[in-house]
Length: 387
Ligand SMILES: *Cc1c(COP(=O)(O)O)cnc(C)c1O
Image 1 (cartoon, rainbow, N blue to C red):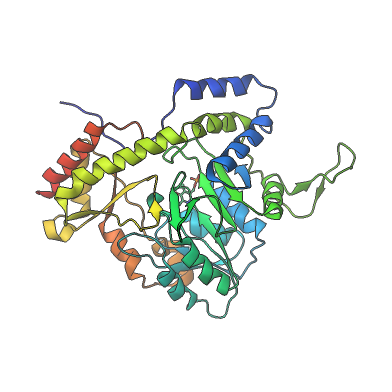
Image 2 (cartoon, rainbow, N blue to C red):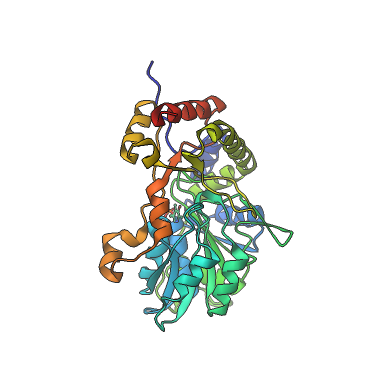
């Protein structure tokens, strides 16, 4: 029987999302209209931040964060090696150097221990920012990382595209990813596989009004309109970019954001179903370790597989799962291994990142999946791994 392959992630676009976009297309402003602010306000409210600044994508969000902090050429930004390329690349956009932090091999997350080790490799250079990633949706130890960053004279910027909707508890205080209680800013993406989708889209949240202002200025060419100036007047202090998110996409974002509670509940239910369905596959297959403070809305269903124990390589498992209708992906190839960074910084020894990469696999997870789909994935894994 032919069954379509379950992708590792996909968007959920419904009729009212489409209607919202059609409405936006009929409105007066296709790009900078009232829906941009409406989306920003709703987003800030959803994550508990004072300010939210919409931008063209998650990569632009990271670049804007570096610009708003005035990170200078030659200064250092610390990023984990297990992340998407953009987390590290944003430092290079402003001429800063990347020091790659290792990750915990069981969770894939930067920890205070791996950050402390990275701090020993600064070589006398000035550290400006630390960019932890809430990999797959599980929250990093924000207070622990913030304490170390502050001590080093740097700020935290959370790269949070995986963790929209994630709750955390630190010292008995309930917090949300994006509320930026421990960091200067948090960045988000609305790429179709993320928790809400606008096609391309991004957001930066902050509680600092000066940072919010700078993010907005850099988002639109560096143009300033001084209060009381002539209506046509603008001034540019520094060149910015065109990183605006159009009204059309903000309309889609607003419509999607209203569904976040439902999407989040569905992702939580699917994660729970996976927990039960995959338990019999332990210890050959284990779900990535959840830190005790993290109550995630998972973006990715990451598992760690002991390929050696079953005598298979990952390629065989990936191919055989695909034949059984199960799509997978690897999150991520350690960024420090990329030819560009190897040429720049040489070969690094980050054993946690290597161990994570050697074992990780992301299984299908998106709100449109059924409980039967989860069973199907677990059955396929059982068969392929010979368990
Ligand atoms: C998706 C993602 C980005 C980049 O977002 P885009 O919108 O695709 O530019 C950056 N960092 C992480 C961790 C991501 O998952």
